[in-house]
Length: 525
Image 1: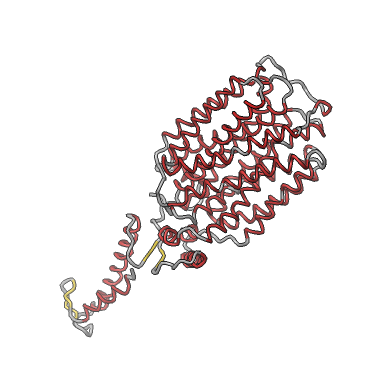
Image 2: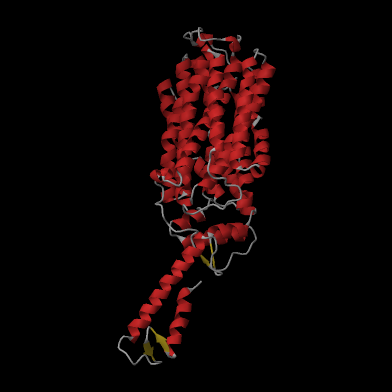
């Protein structure tokens, strides 16, 4: 409400002759020398009271009739043409990420055949990408919370395409290590696209839409396998790297259309720009914009983009549990991805290997390139991403976010346990990995829904960035289990994944907040 207008009316009553604090003030303002001062002080005092009422009402979820919050505006605008176009733009970002990740299950084996790198250097080629992602996740989160989601995504997109394309010209192993590290560093910004996407979605559609975004990840993974199937036998890994960098270029072109998040602009004091963006979104969706004045949902109590605030009293338990959940989800998911190639490429009974089996140095003459049948099995396990999306889509609104994650982690653990009875039968291994991949994919998407919802706008990007960074730590460790330990003891490698996913299941139950049906907060209360 416009308190200043109502204050004028109140002071106008004084002009007609109102006894204020025991002093008679007449219509002309005469009678006492202090009369003018009293009226000014009264107006200022009422303005202050009005502001306090407005903020208190906002905190309690009730706002004055002629004001509205970003959440109310987004809910009023609803899901429409704008969100569909935004889904396509953000989806390209996810496809680029997915294809660069899927390369990691194919590239090391190819370099072993061409350059003769051993298992440890193959594993480190995967690890170096995740090191870059881990180191940059927090960096991009802070950039997004301080300067905006859009600038961070555009800058990272430019460098992602540049280094991904340049990787195809690598002359030696040290060169490709450096270039893939830079690819990983810029992929670290991809989670911020989910933050931007979620901040434009009404609460009723948010969970389903973020889960469906995984369709682009699944498409990218399947496309990468198909590209490898037809490019690797004839053109080799250099052409595969060059062509796989094109989705990042396509996202970069689409990013120029991306609007900045109105939640970010409102929380950073740019209410006019936020209102302008919301009006454009309403026009694209064919809806009328709410009338009145835009206000921030809550009072500012936290500074923007500070990592220490994630461990404040209110958020400490949630943050620590989410770090464990994200680390384990990444560790297990990428473990299955890398394990798939190792199992399909094995020429002996890998399932029967024990700790007395030593890893012998290999040379390029000993390499066994993936055959067409291997790519077919790899494609089948990759297609499991789609059933994973369906499972999460059904459960996330019925059971809630944290119980969906718990159930998927438990299912992941049970499926992995069936590998103990593996008899090197390719069909059974493909089926087991199919279900594991489906549950792992669903886990990631549910975590991507829950995390932006649980953190306030002022900490949303740095919260998602910290979780993503911790997840990369798990991804850094998993090559030494799925590619190195697996060669010595199959049962030992599987046991590591089973124990870790069981621990993460318990962590899901202890999460203090369920975000299903909860509006996204601009501040922490």
